[in-house]
Length: 347
Image (tube, rainbow, N blue to C red):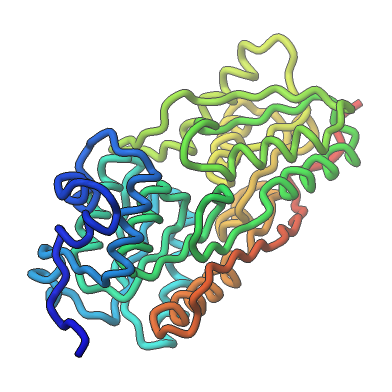
């Protein structure tokens, strides 16, 4: 007769070949120097034994199991409210409710919220950005369905709905070369960090220019939030003012790492009485709704946000209902949206 006795942390430790204290550190996400390989063994043991941590048992009825958590890095970037809108539409169509977690660009907040979420009875989690690898491993070990809408490394074994950001950069490069731009500046929040999309957009832009145009990369060294202003708009604005007031050689085109930065660029150029696109062209990435409402309307790259949100819900729904056992990675192709902010530079 099968053993119905509930598995314990001791059983997990024995199967994983580690101490009980190591299991405790891993499951409680304690800041200890534990390798990813060890964490993976612990979570694999948890999965095999169907072990449920005591904290999760105690809290298991606090949140309904038809709730999906959406985790985003900063609600002040208008891409994320746009993404959340579509996730909510498609989640409601499948009778799910959503809760929104805004980490506010803070890695400690991300970890604190993650601990909170995995101890609740939720149906699944959708990340709107690149989570840490340990978060993925832990969610998988605890059998929590998880989908990432964003870019990740190949090591991430979970459902991922991504976009080819390298190609997005190439599309803008080809557009600017066709307009005969020779000096291009790229303004971005920190390249190194959790957001792979910025790095890949830059790589695609640089590769696409193929040496036919000079590329100047302007990057901030710390990402943070203001209490009374938008970080990305301020970044685009401030760097553009410095570029055109004090720069020795002015660019003929400025590309923001996203539309929010590009909006800040346009704001600065308008205040400096620099004509767009006559003197300077501006472009961005994301195609957020406001990008076609500003003056001039922004040339940008469409990231298929609605389609990716729908697919993320479909994938999560299948995982929740046991219809899919394997990780799925779907990579969408970007679409160039040409508007009035780009044109051929003055002779």
